Image 1 (cartoon, helix red, strand yellow):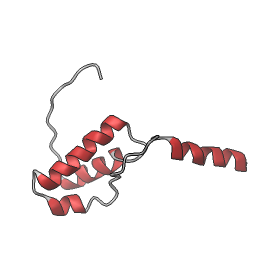
Image 2 (cartoon, helix red, strand yellow; image 1 turned 90 degrees about the vertical axis):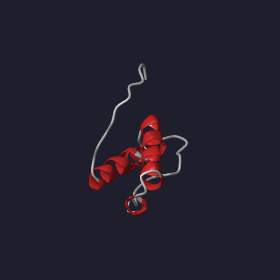
Image 3 (cartoon, rainbow, N blue to C red; image 1 turned 45 degrees about the vertical axis):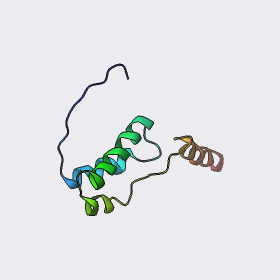
Length: 82
């Protein structure tokens, strides 16, 4: 990133769940993943909403080595099957 800009976001639990589950996926950009995981941690620990953080069941917390590798393997398998 060329610039660091501070900003504030306000959203409800449903919006947070959707955004964080989407941005923490293995295909997500590493910067987005890092921010999403930190936001999830702060929702649980700093804001004290442990129950809301616990309902985010599709959060991907493990760090993939190569983000797009699995999707590339699936695409290659489809190409070879055809």
